[in-house]
Image 1 (cartoon, rainbow, N blue to C red):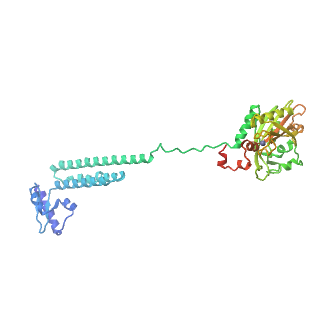
Image 2 (image 1 turned 90 degrees about the horizontal axis):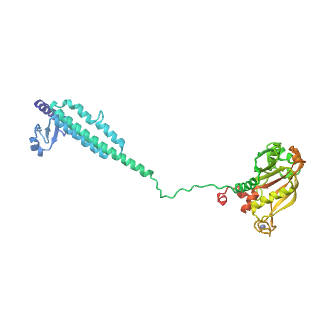
Image 3 (image 1 turned 135 degrees about the vertical axis):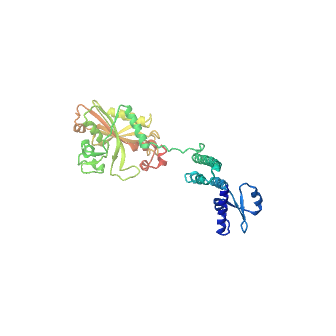
Length: 408
Ligand SMILES: [Zn+2]
């Protein structure tokens, strides 16, 4: 004890040798010297193990034992740590504080390392301070961490909260196109009468589109159906009638089929024309098929499509692939035949072309016209859709205006 006191006095003397000055807090603590105001000197004098050395000038230097220095150091670390933790606002910074104080090279760990300078009998006491301080700092750190994690969690939950009272986003459900609705209706009617729905190629050979339908190269009907040619022999089909030929060539009889599909013509776009539109082809081939079967079938179709009171009328016409041929009109379903704006005052509306399959067409497809007969018809799908929905301009069907299409 005496040896330690002597050491401290010598240390103090060396401070004065360097010249009278105010020591920093850390400096004085390391030396075991505390600068105290003169006024509290008598109180400090009472403290056991405390030495005073008078300088030539005030203040008075208080000299303490190493044990007291350690206590002060540990207290200082404690105060500093608690203040830092209090100011800390992120978990990352909290970890930095933990490492800087409690880590392997942390301030508190350094104090433990300097225990060798403490008198052996004082070491348990100093060790206890360090451990108590360590526990306290750990507890405060843990509390701060829990608090911050809770805050982070709450902030996240606030950000993710779903307000179930908000109006839902409306899912836009698409509509079937008027053409599709009309086609499904036509298919339903014919399938109900025992017909099969078949498809054929849109890019077709000249033979199937014209030749096999009794329209040879020099036939004037070819001019009426000018189309888009891929080359001299392959073209975009002008009619769905080619599907008839494909079906007849299969050699499977009888045939009862409709063939809906897209067709092409080299037409300018206007209210009633389009370079691309749709047809529904119909074909029946069997033994003993007569014009009466054609009339009965199409009259039934007209009633199903346009109403029970619909009457039909056949006007003679010419198509190269049917003989005899006709165009079928239906009584105006708006005015019942009296004449109105819708039927242009005529009381009748033209719907489709039809006729008995030409014997030559049957022969070309290797069907014996003596044994088999049949009828065919072709109806424009757009015509049906325009009539059914009273649309007066075909272009509306293709302009993809949602406001228009939504109505169906
Ligand atoms: Zn009318």
